[in-house]
Length: 239
Image (tube, rainbow, N blue to C red; front, side, top):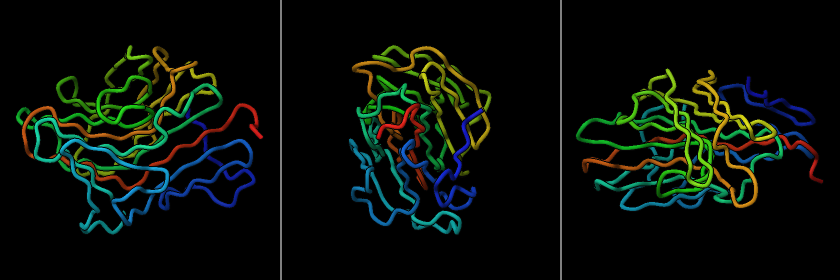
């Protein structure tokens, strides 16, 4: 089971409605986003693209203010990424969790294929070299896929949870303190664990990333991001 985020020596925690996460003094690190007001660099987060697009959501969703939309653009190989701390997170110093709240406007189809990845990762332009993440790749499965990668060697297993369109979903990845086991969550429910090819040790730094990449067709496909976070409870206080 994932470690609960509690208000130890902190004033507040998430209530499941307002995405605000408390930190523990001296033993936790945190970065969140939940209200996007610009498409420019967003605090610790930024974006990259090749023929992709980025915009602010202007739809009628009353429960998700400040949506950021990343899209593939009108290119068969276009992509857009939303990321932070690339190549700066070294797993193994305490329980670490990443989370992204988003929805997909359309699912992948035979003529309009795309791949989406979200979680720990260091690449904004291709599959992950070092990371632990969830992936949607219809050519392999219509369900969320659990993946790990260490120095480009990957483990990939299909979950039993189907990817949905036009529905908000929390994707969360939690790496245990020793970085020898990773558990994956979709909307708070565990969809399995992985224990191989978890990046650890010198040179195996990762980061935080959500990216959408087209692989066939020229009709734009979008990912609507409402919130993202990174949280870690260090094994030992670091100051």
